[in-house]
Length: 170
Image (cartoon, rainbow, N blue to C red; front, side):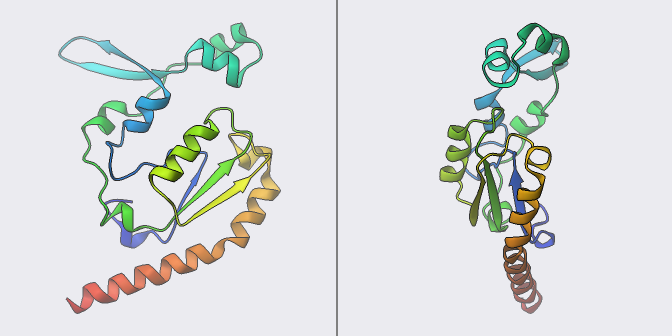
């Protein structure tokens, strides 16, 4: 979004981290995940993992089963921590819409509200009974909201065209 904002009419954040232009792109990962560095001192690799308390209190009823299912993964933490901050001219110029999922256990309401307050999107849409994956838990409601809010895409396209016309004149 930062490199090619002119090609994006609307950025939709659905059960997703919405970064800002103030912090490093890795900031949200640092806030919400445990990171572990492995490897040699010359060549390290950072993996992310969810701790047992998070798994038990938020995602799984059976902690022992959860521990056998969950695998460490990469959220590209090293790349994100070295990346430049996103710019107001690029990323900040894209129309953003953020979906709040009311029953999301993986991404707390507090974190969702923090992202919205820290980097206000054009619109905040709520699917009250949606879990972390509303495309599975509330498919029809998600489709209804997306169809109703198509106006943001149209508005974003108009904004892009105006920017392109301005750039052509320069």
